[in-house]
Length: 108
Length: 449
Image 1: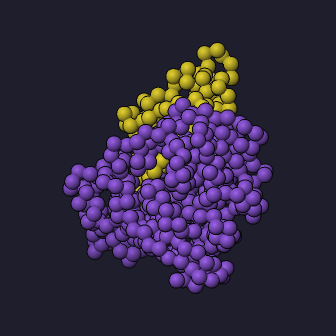
Image 2: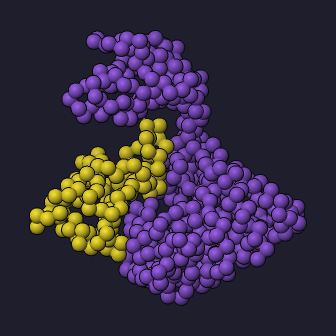
Image 3: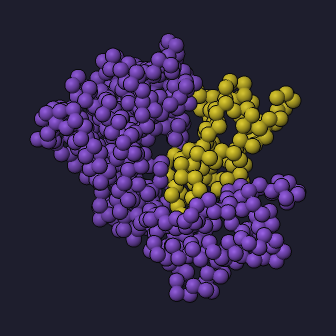
């Protein structure tokens, strides 16, 4: 078992415009990229629970050329809203990084 | 065609060595992105720059005079940080100084992309304004917008280049337009041009080591484009370039532009030498309807804050309850200030009571945050909330001398006007020059002509 944070080389969040936050999980090799995809743990439902957004608004898109999984969600408060605590949206990645990825082979 | 990106944002800096290397490559165009919507609504709303004047002038002073002398067209997009008229004027005043100090002789175009509330509401009535996400169009807020801009496409840049100017100072623009416009004008494939532009607009962020404060060279040909960092200590790698295609994008495959979409799903990334990556396969799909992205910001109120630390674990564990008590106290004791004239929030940092022994709880930081209709209302509510929370006596309290550790005197800080995005929408347009204003100007030996 390892967390997504352990497995990923890059784990980042950033605004995609002021209304959305986009996460990039980028792996150092295709083995870990494939392992995470094959685990089917990253689902719209899980992301919606972690970030308290409707599952229908969660987009999860793998990009094999970069060994990356991109996840985009609407911001709960838009950038610069009175209640905002992260204008750039670049410190939202911790809940995503803490997801545990099962390895059915038992290693890692 | 060789295009140089000075850095990822005008004012971020770059090394002289990288700039000299860029010049040695004989570029056809030099460009720089001078703004972003990332820093939030304040700068668009207030008409001020989030980029520092000294830093911006430094970046331009080192590059612009030499570019002019060598007759390499210089393109600046999203001037002044947000690209509305006051921001454009701000950058033009810096360029006036540089022109004078360097006795420049050149012709320039200023391209403005401001939009009025009336225009937006008229288009909205026609059903031509569409949301991009969880921000609905509120007509009253659009009416009150301080500034509205549209992200201009490649068309105004191409128009200005056709006029033969040496320098383009553009207001709010698509980040890609700065770099894609000259390439598309020269006949290169728009799919490749937009993809290259999307990556290089951040300067050397797509290299290893990465930096938004360094120079990047993009070279586009009929079948491919390449990227090479101008700092000899950096190298573009397939990993970095492919990863940067994702940066700040909602979707990894699609780069949406006013005139269509660049699809990068089937791209091939290739390491051609130690420091250069070659990209092929980016395809452009023209749009059925031309659209421009609108950004608008309106005044929301005036802010006052008070920042404090709390060490006492009992206070930390009860802070929400205490703050509710503070709000009740204010409602009862300040009836002259109507509750709908301000919003009072508590922002909390730290204070994680992970250890069962409360004596070992970590320090918490709080911000008492008030936004009011006037600065006076915000200031009054903030001061009452701060003093009440400081002296709030709860059952079992031991630290009866005060609950809050202030890092500053004054404890209350007036932040001035607060703005919020009232528009982040697309508008359908008949052509991409809609509402664009181009004015020509020039310098002779540093004097405006």
